[in-house]
Length: 206
Image 1: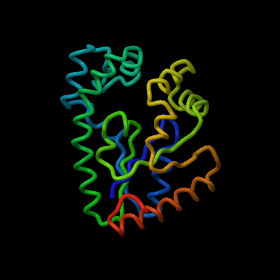
Image 2: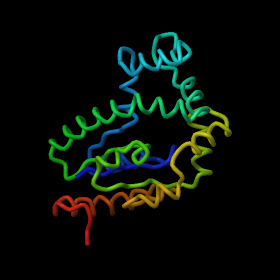
Image 3: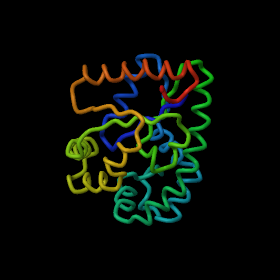
Image 4: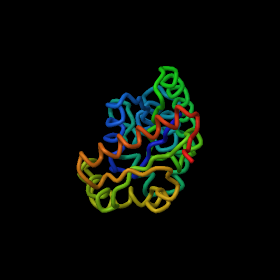
């Protein structure tokens, strides 16, 4: 069974994934794969440079993520173009990585993806788990973590699926607005549920 773990930016997806990992559950991070497909020498990076020129590159030839982020968050058409270049390649690699993890014998595996619903990756999973925090917390964490100003942090949050819609599409929700103990308790409860589902071969418990 594959559980799709998602949430808005700075909601704590990796923190939750590591909590599951401590319980013996492996995971694949779509963000890591997204970085792989735009590394130097990759076809996707060549297409990005062809469209945006050298402003999309750092001096060492790697992708200038800050510059690209400013371009695509200012222009929805450019963001859609970028997604058309990267998403199919990301999906292909995710499928391969998930298959390898499933072969390892874990009761279930996690696909951690900030764009689980937006990218169509939800089709790859049996259940979706949303990590939820208030938007004000997302904005503050994003500004601090990514060294961007509040207006850009707001734009990043606004460009993502609205919180209410994300929650409406969730099979399960973890509230990450509390302390670590509360988070661990929620993870342990869901882990037990997912193990039961996996043992029955179902994706939902009646």
